Length: 494
Image 1 (spheres, helix red, strand yellow):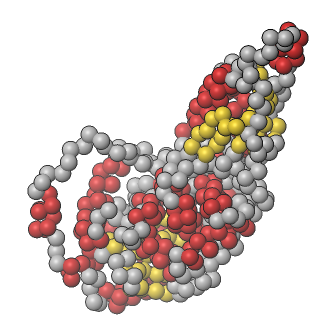
Image 2 (cartoon, rainbow, N blue to C red; image 1 turned 90 degrees about the vertical axis):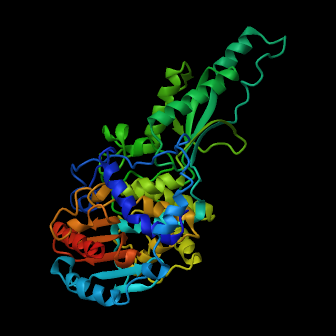
């Protein structure tokens, strides 16, 4: 991990690299997961997304030249030159103050701008006032999940059986043909156990079915009764917003996020028609895949809790939580968000429900000594209009994610969409008064009816990394509110 001064010194060139890379990476948006439209019109057709780009390692990449360190030492400015200018707070009040008074942001918007390196609040307006955050609440979801679970944690989906009759392949010499026939007529019961992986798809179910079929053949089993277990989660399955195209019923087992169109085949994010029974549908797909591999199935899959003494036949794992966080933030993915807060609840020994997740996330953030006063995190996605958060908490979360001593939180920053280029910011920052922010700002968006928010980071005057958060309620129109937020944040980059 780079030291702060090197990281901040190179932030500008890193952004330019992102600009160049954007032409080679298929990233699309912007929808903010259709939250505003979901409320108003059950998320009628909107644009689709591309997946977040998570480049892998480069084992063959040559080591840096020996002279590189010396060159960087020569170029590095004195530490004092990286300090925020003494008049920066006054300058921000002069530039941001009038913009914050725009009627496009409603009667009383909230704002916080923090110097990440020092923690100093450079600008604040109602920064401690709890307001509806919409999807910017996903920043809190991300910090809590990474802190509680660790960036390398993976979510498993397993297949188990408590039926060992296939283990005794030889049998006694006195066994009759009739006994064998009766044994063959009694299928082995297997259970597909949901672990809460919202990114499970047909490709991984196919691999799971292949491993399961191989394990069953090794046991001499050729016919099974398929069951599925979703008991990991408790409480209501439906989000309080009601059935809509932006979030599936929240269950511990699903295939392609319960999407009923082709978006499940390509990538996730954005609205799509959803199944009312994602777990049952996933079990049906799994049973079909087993039959493709030569196994007979006895009747349709049935929901049943797996026996405690069951043996594991096969397992498939999600990508690491670090990658899930990045994908959630880039695409504003509601299903992943609700999965991550429930994983946080499970880690804390709380019920994996809306209520249990709320308690777990708030407790985790409080343990991290973050300013959670007034916060009310009713869900992990921000779809709930009763969520409350302060702009001061949002900037504190972003500053914590940038702390050199907390590298496990870095995906919170790397997952933020890039202004004008990726995710929910792809189509923004095009107006003349905001174009300076294009490619320079990374931020999470939030949109509900009358609610607009933006929180992220930018390299500001003096080369310091700034964290900012702007929350607006009772905005007269979403498009004008978004443009006003873009203008506000762009001022920080100029």
